[in-house]
Amino acid sequence: MEFLSSTFTSYVALVPVTLAQSLILAFVVLGIMIPFRTLHFPDLTSEGAYPLGGCVCGILIAAGVNPALAIIAALACGFVAGCCTALIHLRFRIHTLLAGILMMTMLYSINLRIMGKSNLSIFGSDTVYNWAPFVTPGFPVSKIIIAGIIGAGVFLALNWFFKTEKGTALRAVGSNPAMAEAQGISVWISTIVGVGLASAFSATSGALMVQSQGFADVNMGLGILINGLAALMIGEAVVGKKSVFRQLLAPFVGAIIYYQLVSLCLAAGMPPPDLKLATGLFVLAMLALPTLKRGRGAGGAPAHEKLRE
Image 1 (spheres, rainbow, N blue to C red):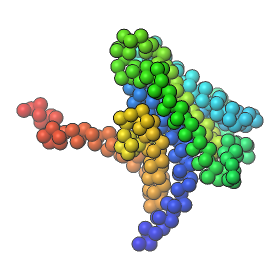
Image 2 (image 1 turned 120 degrees about the vertical axis):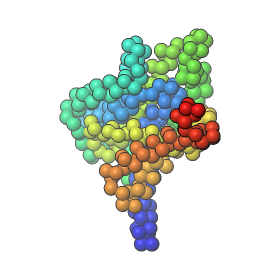
Image 3 (image 1 turned 180 degrees about the vertical axis):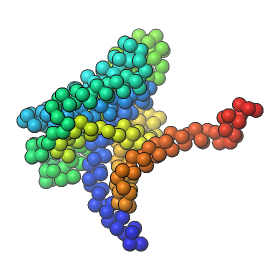
Image 4 (image 1 turned 90 degrees about the vertical axis):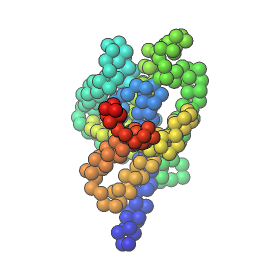
């Protein structure tokens, strides 16, 4: 009973911090969802675009640039990185995953060049979280307000865009590239714009996180992809993915639930190094569950046994 009480107390204390973190990292989940679900373009660029946005934002804020302009610059750099991944795939016919790995690898060196060192502190600098009204700057509430406002704006803008002619064309390319091309839609332009947009959101998340934690690091994206996939799986399981609205809502809902589960594990005493293992096992379970359900629905016999018959 005492263990449950202490766990609950610790969890409640972590809720504001993890809620702010989840709203910031929801942009990475969104950056993972767009290539995977909308374009059917499995991409790993997010793990490189996230620290890219953080490094660009960090060096600009350290130079005295307005924090909002630093975020915009980070977004633009992320967009360029995503466009390069798409071009590598389209121009040289390299598999999407390999193209993403190549870009992610190259971005590590680029990030080091941008900052000139592996990490950079911006403690004491002005950030967008200082602009939150009626709250003390630097506290989790200010981060929740600013990240929530930006997230709501992005959600509404994307929900509108994907229902326009251009957005519908982009979704058509992901659904059936050959048919989309037959209808006069440029597969190249739609793919480049879509993957670039996804990486732009990942870079935006990195910029927001750097301003939240007060420093930039070239290794800050390590493992962010698996965390984002876990959050996406949770979000899709909760809200579904059968409409544009639900598919866009899933990254935000999933990120909030996932990081609350992480805080619950920490409050219960799970060592932080074990969180990666737990996350990997969870994603594996979520990916395997539909296959297991289909196997049981088809008569319960495994596929290799049916082949023998």
